[in-house]
Image (tube, rainbow, N blue to C red):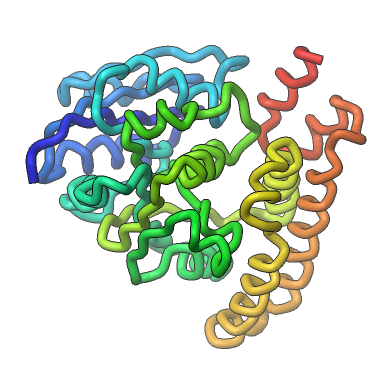
Length: 311
């Protein structure tokens, strides 16, 4: 495969020690034909010496501007002219030295517009965090086209910017990221690419450690934001179907997983999934809530605060 120039973009917001682990892992990748930029909205700057030693650079991002879509859109504008954009979240750490090469290998297929890798649970993750990674990021790779929506529905447009990459020319032709989004900028872009005739690749051989053990409150808030995103981008549901069917399959699989791994936590599962469903349904109806209320219901408080200012 010919060497391809890529830009690795890492938005950060009050990062912990895993950002240093991510940068160290990037410095050990077998492919080094990339530049790194950290888009920083609130950190102590302790990573900057490591970043500069790698030849990377950082750029400050105002808190009001930092969101899932606007920040990534800013990164693509900085690197205008590169062939591929690779995104990591600040807590996604490559599992080996081939992660980046394996992800970019998806673009050997000229029909692929975006690709994402496998997310493994971090060591010591709880059963809910482990299950979410196992069901959403399986051991088999696949490539989806628009025709696959008949079988896979909304999953056809699934994409993750925790560890994902885009063909720059395809992303630009499809309109790029939205200017603002509470979350889901990756699904937005993937759906646009699919509708434009591109394909979405999942590379199980490209692996990072990335998982979360959310509290009940966090599960509710995150689900509210998911519902709000889907309500505001209703065309995605119209084109690919609703998420409820996938949610039911998730719950059934989760129950089986807990029966094997942690049966004493089944009552917690009922409460947890109930909170997720409630948050999601309220998110779908977010237009009926006062903006100040949404600041408390959603996880992405900065987005909702800015949303209030713009109304």
